[in-house]
Image (cartoon, rainbow, N blue to C red; front, top):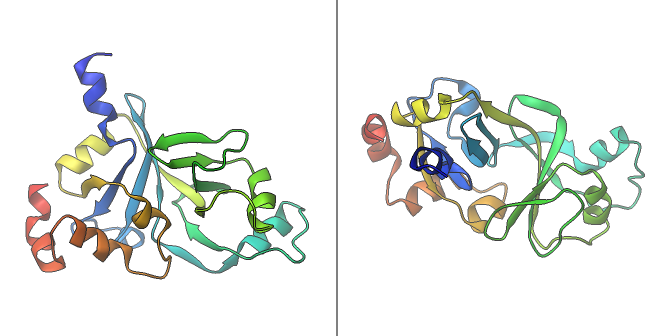
Length: 190
C-alpha cells in the first residue's frame, strides 16, 4: 500500500463532527461514523439523529417479518443516500452473515436477519439501527475536512452506542476539549 493510499484511508472508523460552517440544516450538529474511505470515495452513517415516530416494529412490518411481541428499538436517520436500507451497527460479540468489522469492537451489517435476533432480546449487546447513509465522491471528503466542514475524532463505543436522546455532539466536543463557542471560532482552522 502506498503512503497516499494509507493517508486516504485514515478516516475509516473515525467520527466526523459537523462544524457550524456546514450550511445544510439536516447536518447541523451532526456526527457521522465513517465506515469506508478509500480512493473511490467515502461512506458513513449519521449516528446522532433519531427519526421521530419510527420504530423497529414498523420496519419489520415493511419487511413482512412478524413484529408481534418484539422489543422495540429507536431508529436513527443515517443520511440521504440508500434510504431504503437499514444499516445496523453492533458490537462484535455477535456476528451475523454479512457483518463486517469497521474498527475495534464495532461492526456493521445490512443483513435484515439480524433484526429478528435483536428484537427477540438476542444478538449483540450493543446495537444501533440507522436508515440511510452519507456518501462522498473521490477526494470530496478530504476537501470538506480541509475546508473546515468536518472535524475528525477518534470513535468510541459510548459515542456510537450511548443514549440516543443525549446530546452526543456536545459530548464529542468535550472529548476533544472544545466548547461550542470555541469550536465555532476554530472551525475554519480544522
